[in-house]
Length: 331
Image (cartoon, rainbow, N blue to C red; front, side, top):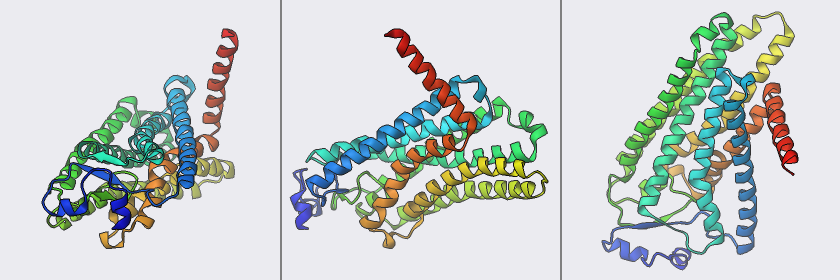
């Protein structure tokens, strides 16, 4: 309690809230116990990671939407995945960087609601998009002759629209369940951003119903796409093992390994955050997984896809080469 009172810049003490005051702002306690030197080091580290993730994802968005050699469904989906990653990290990381160098770690009630909705929306859309990318790999490998017909441009646009639409609609449900009860208790959030399970636990009344709905929604949103991913890769594996060419197997494994690595990173951290019982949550456990899916995964995605894909490396080299040439001509 002493540490919380020490860092309470909102002007409202926990005792005031217990006496009936309505919460109008929250205090993010993610790195409050860190020393100034540690916060400075974390600021430099996360700023570097954020800048790198923005640059790499921005480059992938640019080349997948402008390079005619990458005119295929796989790169169409990859461009949208990078766009989702840019949205995801921009929702949480800039605020965290500001709080690492400022003493005031207050976030308004409306800002917290907005941040949570964007995290819900983008996170759910990414879950579904990763499943559609697995299906795209399945069609390309198991039905190559019918691939162009099955994965037409209209189908690809429809699949991306479904991912975004479901994220937007599902975010409204999760937002309502998170803020359906009034907040009149402690306003300290033991994380560096507004994460649903932690915020719900601070609401008045019994939060168990909201937590159960969030848990049930996570099962649908996370496990349903996971089923599609598992089925797609099971059929891909069966198709690969039935081939005689070892070179074809290696190329196919390399293509699928990139996507599977991204899926494992994202789904593992999301499942821990939203499908674990509330009693097992603690700041020391929650923060590493929150960092994993808010900054580490968006940073790793472009690295994983570009370094294991010759076409992506070639497109990046061409894009960077054109940029260097244009700069040289302008000098």
